[in-house]
Length: 147
Length: 147
Image 1: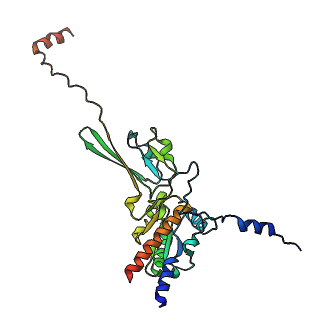
Image 2: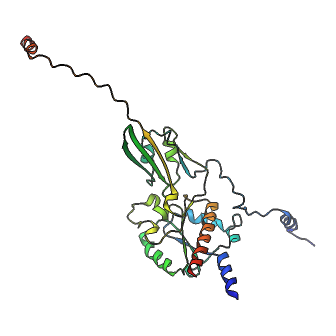
Image 3: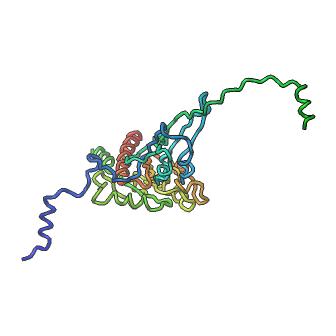
């Protein structure tokens, strides 16, 4: 008498189930996974390349005038993001990073926003030159005659 | 006598209805993989129902195209209260890259309040499961509030 799948049956009787025990063991995403965006405002130089490159237009920027420069706020809306990583690739200062975090569950829109604010200082103003006294009108006239 | 038992059963087993409103099929494939043996969402009590009239949770994927808009409204009206609307992926939340297209009619919250949104393009099966578990909690609260 032959039992065709006896070996397989005995093997699976004592092996662990193939189901991942998800909420108890959260697996890490594979290398290179594009997940939640992290923005480093201290590295950003406000070049706007990420906004230019973003296909769905998930990145918005607001600029406010402050005393010592511009107060720049970048806002990444993860509910509109395609997670294509182009903003990270094109960022010249590596200020944007797509992490491996993939659990992005939100009940309102505000939870899906990633924001970063920094102040971009205006270049120092050149010193104001002292006002020179006006040349006397008499000196100008002989010059014109020479010409 | 059986009232309590039925209520407990209803709370523990929420039925899903998957509604595709012009999705690119990425999210749909990920949702189907959630009920495979590897992730096995049925251990949380989920079951994909064939009819919206049997469903407790409606999972909407895709930006709402003008063809599917009327069908979306009709389907949502058929779902009995209490219902939970889950937006799967970026598209129902904000139309993603299709935002502003002539055949796309706005994000989902124009037509129905979104209770849980799962971000990602597409989200990982683990993220979908976490979102659905959150949806069940909301469903429980809604059901208790209705009494």
